[in-house]
View 1 (cartoon, rainbow, N blue to C red):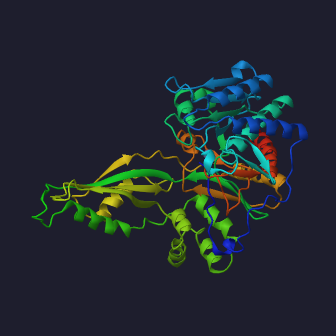
View 2 (view 1 turned 90 degrees about the horizontal axis):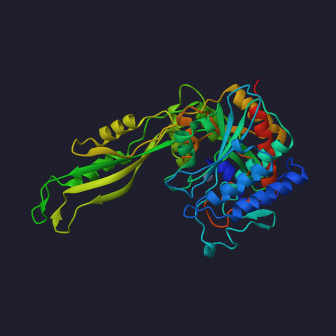
View 3 (view 1 turned 120 degrees about the horizontal axis):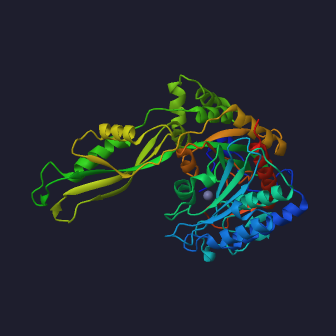
Length: 471
Ligand SMILES: [Zn+2]
């Protein structure tokens, strides 16, 4: 997945500038690095890695590149589960001085399906046009995968000796499929990717509007999803003899109560920092309301105003919503069963048990049985330590002076949930600046600015150097 901008204020919506190809120019890598980066990028886009094709072919091509760049065979691993031989993962390691546990970067190689007939260019050809690179994965997330592969080759060619090992895992099945590479590597080859902390360019990152860079998000947490089923069963009978106890009516009455449920307001270090930074981009009442969310004691009036906007509502609460409904078995029979799927997006430190208990209390009918349909895979919030924020801020300022780094909690989910779940703090960021009004990740004619791609290559290089340093 790729984060979509969590931003909807009136102030920032004004203007409606169309996405422009030109942003103020950022530092660029040397020309020979640009040439390499473009070559890697083209190979990535033109190797179709939708789920049915798998990622093995591209994984093999990366292995060949790392060997050619001078990586020893034992520092480049090509891995796939026996039951999914086409779903290839590559783990490459640049050996360091052993001053600390390694730095890990994770990035997925698979892409979402793209139907050529829906696109105005071929999705599996890298097309450069009017200042943009077009192709499936240019934004999600092959641009960053190419930046990482290029950086590992560049660091090797420079003879860079980091304080600690730098590991990059190029993985599979993030967008779908049942062989998620990060999850599988952690379960079966933990030693290969074990690390002190991890970076993931598939979340956070820059946001532009028109020809202006607005901010860069540093994703430290994401909401966890869990799906429940609520069901009523009943003895049923003939429709000509209705009785008050009806499975559909009982469920419907419970759902009406559930539709009014708002979970307790809940902020955390990330969302408090997020509201604090976003407030600076706003004015008037909205600015004051956002500032109020940084306090320990929340102002109920400010909360109420913010809850009126769906994005801020999602930032402030665990949310649950009915998504699918079924019931009855014949037109002329009383329903024996009525059920509903309820999907919840929980704040990182909420639990499925607590959420289920509140749903049951709200349904307020012991005949409506609630069970877990899809369990939660919770990942804790990664701490916003001074070391992480100051390091990241220094890298960002070296690229884009004056740009704000805003801590970010996603309402969606990325591979970081797996690394966070096993205790590796993980930070999502990248140096691309998709337009707030025209983000085409997963969509047709997916694209990224040509200059953005190259400056992301430079950003990735500076980021890996800075984060591999051990003080
Ligand atoms: Zn992605």
